[in-house]
Length: 391
Image (cartoon, rainbow, N blue to C red; front, side, top):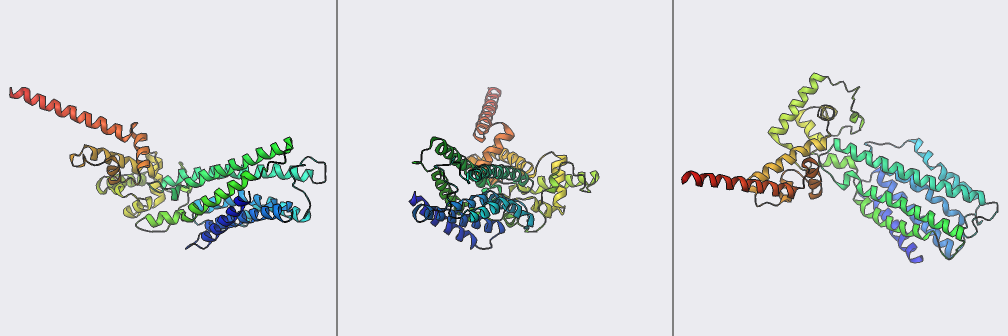
């Protein structure tokens, strides 16, 4: 176990240092760095507790993990998010346990081997265990909801998918993080009721924290500010509010009249047919907005409200039709499906396959086989007809 702790301390500390000092750090980066430093501190306390002197009171640190996860997602998925003093309220349980730890300093408060002993600390152990389980469960559910909401809303801004903007990696890690602590609780309950002190229930948590330190150092360092990433990919780089308030399907306060909405829709459809902007793999709604000189939120309202689609679906439907045209073009007969997809504006094979099957009910290869077999049949029929006429 000591080896895991030393590896975890080293990895989390240097990962935190690397993220905190990366170029142009965002608030989310500082939150991630603070989280990694706290993981290093918790593991350091564990070593001291095991090898030097008992430190039963260090257990207050995990109460910061849920709030830090929430704030990291918040500052990643909301444009121009600012710190609010109300965010401190999320750390009140941590502060309460921290103060209690100072009061009970040096006392065997959190011993698991005699958890049910009717000593003065039994009620504290019960409250601590229940509170931490509620905390980690609540913030994990909130994280899941926020990331899923973000993944839906981001489709009104961009026409492509990327781990850098969808936070798919963080969703997987958040679920894994929660399941790790569920395992810790299950093993802890076993130790308490079976009274088996030979097994250390905190071991899964240290394995998990070490793994998360590696994962966060890899993904967290590479993760840019999402909205900065979108504006960087946009060829116009025009900064404007990217809030999600205009995704409300009713648009009660948008001020856009039906007559103007229809005019904007005609402009949009004409632009798509004539200029084919969907061939740009990094196309965002900001590019279209600037080309047509139509406010972005009006474009979103037109696409959502009149067409009943989000921007992502709207653009990729054009790309699907472009793929079909290229498949029918003899000049592209020797191209692979992936090459054709990239030429049509898709940025990855996986997103192409997913979008194509959803739109056509067939995989790209199935569609290609059906198209080619149909073409061959029609070609053979023409040859047969010409042969009959000649005879």
